[in-house]
Length: 225
Length: 222
Image (tube, rainbow over all chains, first blue to last red; front, side):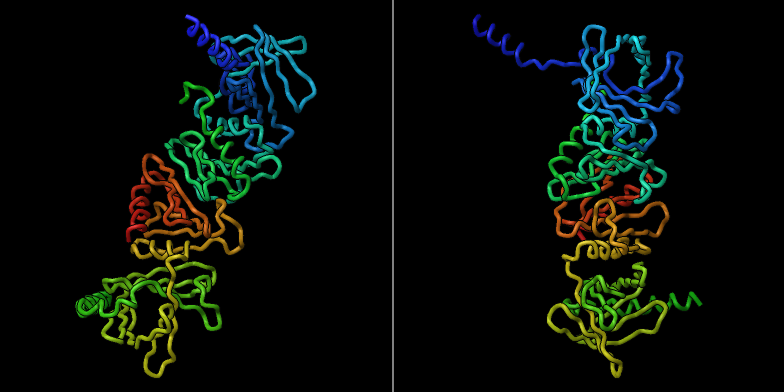
């Protein structure tokens, strides 16, 4: 009896708390309107809401620098979402309401916005968002060299503090599996089934790239596994 | 005209079927450098691979680091005599000499002798490129790092063009590093190590992958 109680107590203590407790808002989103406009092709902003409360915001264009990449935390308190950032000196709070499975309405005294679920085939953007969720991305831009992959979309990602550079190659309909290491640090690894990441600076920051690629290759949502 | 050549080649093939492996020391890959250049494979202008069956694989390297590959010639060794048979040229005859194990000297009568250097199995990217050329399915190879730029993070790289336009192979040399693992695409090899510091990557559509897989798996067993 006592032992059972202890087990229950320890479970209560060690059960992780999820700041983003409302799983209806987990996932990949883009800034849109109530009526569906702009659509994904025309939106300028993407969001990834991780179940652990991290939020990454990126421009949709496949180029961006540090100023336009945002990385913050979200906490749900009832029907209020509280956004906090170590980089921006203010918190903001919005009432939020999922209008359906694919559309969330955020509103406060200053204004409102709508987030619509990202199309499932936006794999390259999803991979970029997962990388941005590590908080380590300084900038990215379309790749202009290493043109070995036909018309596949390619993006070069620079890490903060000049820690190195990644190439992402989007190969629609590919089914990629496995990983290659050079001197025990990842060099080639898929971030999802059809986005390949190559570490263009082998030898630099092996511990960081190991962590980054491992995090970014993990699905954002458990049901995507 | 072509028919006559073919018949000449066929006769040559029959003649050379005997006595091929008389001198096993000569089998393997040998490279020649221009006069005055250091004896390193990076300076090679010509590589020949003398295969056990008497097949000669010839690789001509031009100043833009493009390798053209020919696999139609043959050789025959009898004692110290070496004869090359080319499909489009007269036969040539040479005397075999060695200076140590790594230098082959071919002399022929009054001509000055030619010196060849053994391509070490440790020559990373070059060894892999030459082994691929031995498959007979390679048309040409372009070495890519003339400007010192790394390609996909690799200090050395070469693009291998096959005898069809469906796909090509990128060889990446990581010079002394150790590569491990593999990435598959549609269940086929896509990015795989072919030696401890060389990785091969298939460039092309899904339909190219089975052929790529067969070629790169042949590298480790050939």
